Length: 138
Image (cartoon, rainbow, N blue to C red; front, side):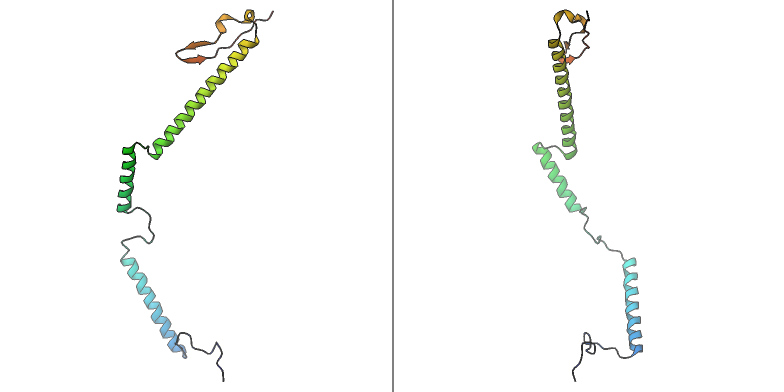
């Protein structure tokens, strides 16, 4: 007779009696409890996962940052602050240019006799200030 797959012993072990199965189950459960207890009492010196915070890694990163600083490179936070400052200056200069071009358009569009002399655009200390141009109506 041929043996089917269900009748073949698995891994060379075959438990025939229920008492042997219960004994095996009890021994396995006891071993698992002992392993869990040992793990709780003696925690690991190292974490289970590498977090990148080892002393060696932190020291290497610090020396690398110092070397870059000696070469003249900015730190990340200083670089971001500098870029924001540049963007703000660029925006301010664009606004000044836009205001100056608006005032030039107003001056070009009106006749000289219609302008009030106090309302002209004045230049002070390198800044262009915009004053309202009042036009006289005849």
